[in-house]
Amino acid sequence: MEVKTFTYKNLLGTYYLQGWSGSQKMDDHIAEMLKADWEILGSTAQPGDGRTWGPGVKRATITMTFKKR
Image (tube, rainbow, N blue to C red):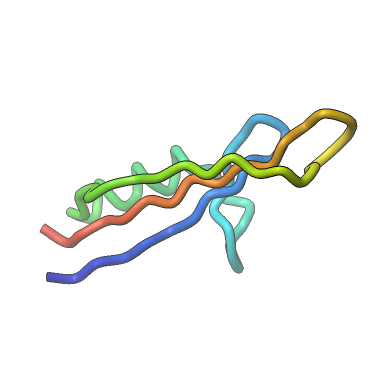
């Protein structure tokens, strides 16, 4: 079984894939993975305490794990 884990960061209310291709939206990336016969094993969300932009905005990440069917 092949397993991959990806982390998505919240930037102004939209989650983006973290890493070298950080401009890809989370929804688009998940759709690509599902089309390529990966399935979601699980996900976790971590609220952050750092600011991403402006007063009161919190950072957050979502980590999703996929396995190949």
